[in-house]
Length: 155
Image 1 (cartoon, one colour):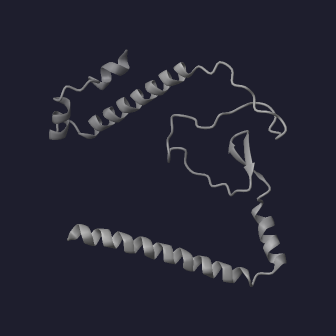
Image 2 (spheres, one colour):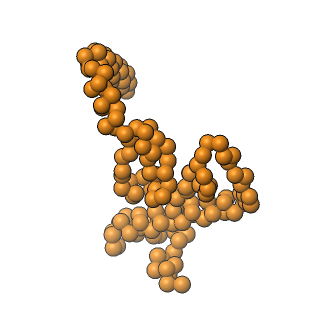
Image 3 (cartoon, one colour):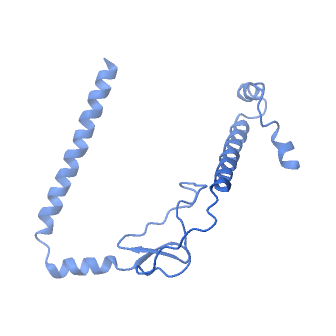
């Protein structure tokens, strides 16, 4: 019975969100009819949609957006998903051919990064257990494959 109520609530909540979005859209469309062309053009000009957005320092991206800065540790990533090419950004210039695209080295690095991430998380969880508590004793007595953290760092 509880699961049925929970499922029904989830569907009703999703419907409610959908109706709220439709209502907001209706309000926006009605409001847009009352705005003069001059004011609308002024608003668009103030948003500077023609200005290119900077991804990283010296890495100018595409125009037509609003840049929102966030802390770099908010969504940590170890793999750069943007393939970068030096040179001109003219649309008439062809994409350069990738030379020495050695996938084996990339795969090895990916595996190494994932292993390091797992070890770091394991060390962090071992450190959270406290000194000698029941949680840390149970974790350490299970035959951890990483050994003691100090011996790994001292070599």
